[in-house]
Length: 278
Ligand SMILES: Cc1ncc(COP(=O)(O)O)c(C=O)c1O
Image (tube, rainbow, N blue to C red):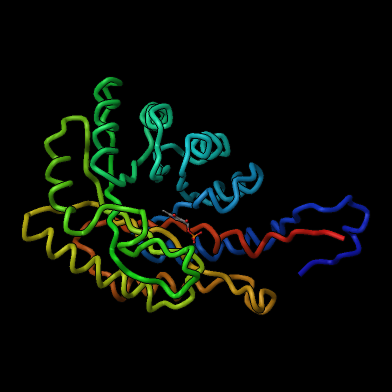
């Protein structure tokens, strides 16, 4: 991985980031993502918000996935264009929503009707239009640690599938709200592509259901979740992005013109970081 000798003089503990590996990883993601003209990657800032790391990632043309006003500011300062910033989270406060409106971010990933109402109220006051995607809880388990599974009905995240049409129909009556898509995220450190396939199948069903109500959304955001190889990081320093994107190409039935968004965090940065201690 790296030579330990040159690091001996530095006071421990500290984080060492292998930016060469980061750049190689970003190259692979870019190369694989660009094979699909409707695929868009947003880096999940929560995975590592170090300003230098953010700046490097922004140089590859990706968007950012933020979960706080602080992350929105950090992403924009690091060079991510505001119109490629998506903003998720179950507890958005007014100042954070106002910041998103003021910066003209791409999309608010909305978790509940109550949140939608607050965003609409603030958008009216600011005389802005908020693009929103609804985070739907797909009730899908993932083969990962129970505490980082987020797509089961019992988890706190997202709008229940049975409420989906009502929420969308309600939003379409709001003048300052523009419904652009659906958002999902089933968990983190997922290495079994079958879990992403299950998500694709669920999204396919939901799109059929929406079609019956003549509802069409322009974008689908499948979140992140791709895991890294913690057992043999040196053997596989870069996760298999090709297989990951291929899983979505093969199993997700997108409508014509529909855009597919990803929010990758761990798989972009985890393997580049080491905690050095004595
Ligand atoms: C909504 C959402 N998107 C993306 C991510 C990033 O996930 P990962 O780091 O597993 O790719 C998370 C992680 O918690 C998340 O909650």
